[in-house]
Length: 141
Ligand code: HEM
Image (cartoon, rainbow, N blue to C red; front, side):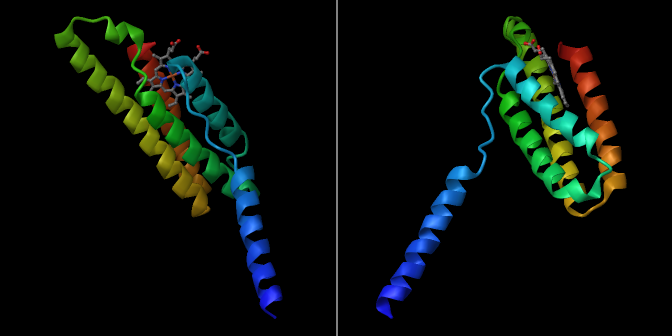
Protein backbone atom coordinates (compact mmCIF):
# COMPACT_ATOMS: atom_id res chain seq x y z
CA UNK A 1 0.00 0.00 0.00
CA UNK A 2 2.81 2.34 1.01
CA UNK A 3 4.61 1.47 -2.23
CA UNK A 4 1.52 2.19 -4.35
CA UNK A 5 1.00 5.49 -2.56
CA UNK A 6 4.60 6.67 -3.03
CA UNK A 7 4.54 5.50 -6.66
CA UNK A 8 1.47 7.65 -7.32
CA UNK A 9 3.24 10.66 -5.77
CA UNK A 10 6.40 9.96 -7.82
CA UNK A 11 4.40 9.73 -11.07
CA UNK A 12 2.58 12.95 -10.18
CA UNK A 13 5.87 14.78 -9.57
CA UNK A 14 7.33 13.47 -12.83
CA UNK A 15 4.26 14.60 -14.79
CA UNK A 16 4.50 18.07 -13.22
CA UNK A 17 8.20 18.34 -14.05
CA UNK A 18 7.60 17.20 -17.63
CA UNK A 19 4.77 19.66 -18.25
CA UNK A 20 6.89 22.47 -16.77
CA UNK A 21 9.79 21.69 -19.08
CA UNK A 22 7.60 21.44 -22.20
CA UNK A 23 5.75 24.72 -21.46
CA UNK A 24 6.98 27.26 -24.01
CA UNK A 25 8.91 30.13 -22.52
CA UNK A 26 8.17 33.63 -23.79
CA UNK A 27 11.34 34.87 -25.54
CA UNK A 28 13.16 37.87 -24.09
CA UNK A 29 13.96 40.42 -26.82
CA UNK A 30 17.66 41.28 -27.14
CA UNK A 31 17.08 44.39 -29.26
CA UNK A 32 14.28 46.83 -30.03
CA UNK A 33 14.02 45.44 -33.55
CA UNK A 34 13.80 41.86 -32.26
CA UNK A 35 11.15 42.85 -29.68
CA UNK A 36 9.02 44.52 -32.35
CA UNK A 37 9.30 41.43 -34.56
CA UNK A 38 8.18 39.17 -31.70
CA UNK A 39 5.24 41.50 -31.01
CA UNK A 40 4.30 41.55 -34.68
CA UNK A 41 4.43 37.75 -35.02
CA UNK A 42 1.91 37.32 -32.21
CA UNK A 43 -0.48 40.00 -33.50
CA UNK A 44 -0.34 38.49 -36.99
CA UNK A 45 -1.43 35.06 -35.76
CA UNK A 46 -4.10 36.56 -33.49
CA UNK A 47 -5.50 38.71 -36.33
CA UNK A 48 -5.72 35.69 -38.65
CA UNK A 49 -7.77 33.67 -36.17
CA UNK A 50 -9.58 36.51 -34.36
CA UNK A 51 -13.05 35.37 -35.48
CA UNK A 52 -12.38 31.67 -34.88
CA UNK A 53 -13.93 31.15 -31.46
CA UNK A 54 -12.45 27.63 -31.23
CA UNK A 55 -9.04 29.33 -31.02
CA UNK A 56 -9.94 31.89 -28.34
CA UNK A 57 -7.84 30.06 -25.75
CA UNK A 58 -4.75 30.14 -27.94
CA UNK A 59 -5.45 33.76 -28.96
CA UNK A 60 -5.67 34.74 -25.28
CA UNK A 61 -2.32 33.09 -24.57
CA UNK A 62 -0.71 34.87 -27.54
CA UNK A 63 -2.19 38.20 -26.45
CA UNK A 64 -0.69 37.68 -22.97
CA UNK A 65 2.66 36.92 -24.62
CA UNK A 66 2.31 40.07 -26.74
CA UNK A 67 1.75 42.13 -23.56
CA UNK A 68 4.74 40.52 -21.84
CA UNK A 69 7.05 41.07 -24.84
CA UNK A 70 5.81 44.66 -25.26
CA UNK A 71 6.57 45.33 -21.59
CA UNK A 72 10.11 43.93 -22.06
CA UNK A 73 10.60 45.92 -25.30
CA UNK A 74 9.61 49.10 -23.41
CA UNK A 75 13.01 48.91 -21.67
CA UNK A 76 14.80 49.00 -25.05
CA UNK A 77 14.86 52.73 -25.73
CA UNK A 78 15.29 53.75 -29.41
CA UNK A 79 18.90 54.82 -30.01
CA UNK A 80 17.75 58.14 -31.49
CA UNK A 81 16.11 58.98 -28.17
CA UNK A 82 19.27 58.00 -26.29
CA UNK A 83 21.30 60.40 -28.41
CA UNK A 84 19.15 63.46 -27.57
CA UNK A 85 20.33 66.17 -25.15
CA UNK A 86 19.35 65.10 -21.62
CA UNK A 87 16.44 67.56 -21.11
CA UNK A 88 14.74 66.44 -24.33
CA UNK A 89 15.74 62.81 -23.81
CA UNK A 90 13.67 62.44 -20.63
CA UNK A 91 10.53 63.81 -22.31
CA UNK A 92 10.88 61.53 -25.36
CA UNK A 93 11.78 58.53 -23.21
CA UNK A 94 8.65 59.08 -21.08
CA UNK A 95 6.51 59.31 -24.22
CA UNK A 96 8.07 56.13 -25.67
CA UNK A 97 7.49 54.26 -22.41
CA UNK A 98 3.89 55.44 -22.03
CA UNK A 99 3.03 54.50 -25.64
CA UNK A 100 4.56 51.05 -25.12
CA UNK A 101 2.61 50.73 -21.85
CA UNK A 102 -0.62 51.59 -23.66
CA UNK A 103 0.10 48.85 -26.21
CA UNK A 104 0.90 46.30 -23.47
CA UNK A 105 -2.35 47.20 -21.66
CA UNK A 106 -4.35 46.81 -24.86
CA UNK A 107 -2.74 43.36 -25.19
CA UNK A 108 -3.90 42.40 -21.69
CA UNK A 109 -7.43 43.61 -22.47
CA UNK A 110 -7.31 41.61 -25.69
CA UNK A 111 -6.40 38.45 -23.77
CA UNK A 112 -9.31 39.08 -21.39
CA UNK A 113 -11.76 39.61 -24.28
CA UNK A 114 -10.74 36.25 -25.82
CA UNK A 115 -11.07 34.53 -22.43
CA UNK A 116 -14.61 35.93 -22.12
CA UNK A 117 -15.31 34.79 -25.71
CA UNK A 118 -16.09 38.40 -26.59
CA UNK A 119 -14.80 38.39 -30.17
CA UNK A 120 -16.52 41.69 -31.00
CA UNK A 121 -14.52 43.41 -28.27
CA UNK A 122 -11.38 41.57 -29.40
CA UNK A 123 -11.86 42.94 -32.95
CA UNK A 124 -12.18 46.46 -31.56
CA UNK A 125 -9.04 46.03 -29.44
CA UNK A 126 -7.10 44.76 -32.46
CA UNK A 127 -8.08 47.96 -34.30
CA UNK A 128 -6.88 50.01 -31.35
CA UNK A 129 -3.59 48.09 -31.33
CA UNK A 130 -3.15 48.72 -35.02
CA UNK A 131 -3.62 52.47 -34.37
CA UNK A 132 -1.21 52.31 -31.39
CA UNK A 133 1.38 50.74 -33.68
CA UNK A 134 0.86 53.38 -36.37
CA UNK A 135 1.06 56.23 -33.84
CA UNK A 136 4.20 54.75 -32.23
CA UNK A 137 5.89 54.43 -35.59
CA UNK A 138 4.97 57.99 -36.66
CA UNK A 139 6.51 59.24 -33.41
CA UNK A 140 9.63 57.04 -33.13
CA UNK A 141 10.43 54.90 -36.16
C1 HEM B 1 1.52 47.84 -31.03
C2 HEM B 1 2.11 46.99 -31.82
C3 HEM B 1 3.40 47.18 -32.56
C4 HEM B 1 3.89 46.30 -33.47
C5 HEM B 1 3.23 45.00 -33.88
C6 HEM B 1 5.14 46.82 -33.97
C7 HEM B 1 5.90 46.20 -34.95
C8 HEM B 1 7.09 46.70 -35.45
C9 HEM B 1 7.87 46.07 -36.51
C10 HEM B 1 7.47 44.80 -37.25
C11 HEM B 1 8.97 46.82 -36.69
C12 HEM B 1 10.09 46.58 -37.72
C13 HEM B 1 11.18 45.72 -37.08
C14 HEM B 1 12.23 45.39 -38.12
O1 HEM B 1 13.13 46.22 -38.30
O2 HEM B 1 12.12 44.37 -38.78
C15 HEM B 1 8.92 47.92 -35.75
C16 HEM B 1 9.91 48.87 -35.60
C17 HEM B 1 9.86 49.88 -34.67
N1 HEM B 1 8.82 50.17 -33.82
FE1 HEM B 1 7.12 49.09 -33.57
N2 HEM B 1 5.41 48.00 -33.34
C18 HEM B 1 4.38 48.28 -32.48
C19 HEM B 1 4.27 49.37 -31.66
C20 HEM B 1 5.23 50.34 -31.49
C21 HEM B 1 5.14 51.44 -30.56
C22 HEM B 1 3.95 51.72 -29.64
C23 HEM B 1 6.31 52.14 -30.69
C24 HEM B 1 6.78 53.35 -29.95
C25 HEM B 1 6.26 53.80 -28.82
C26 HEM B 1 7.12 51.47 -31.69
C27 HEM B 1 8.40 51.87 -32.09
C28 HEM B 1 9.16 51.26 -33.05
C29 HEM B 1 10.51 51.69 -33.44
C30 HEM B 1 11.30 52.84 -32.82
C31 HEM B 1 10.94 50.82 -34.44
C32 HEM B 1 12.31 50.82 -35.17
C33 HEM B 1 13.17 49.74 -34.48
C34 HEM B 1 14.56 49.58 -35.10
O3 HEM B 1 14.66 49.40 -36.32
O4 HEM B 1 15.53 49.61 -34.35
N3 HEM B 1 6.44 50.38 -32.16
N4 HEM B 1 7.77 47.80 -35.00
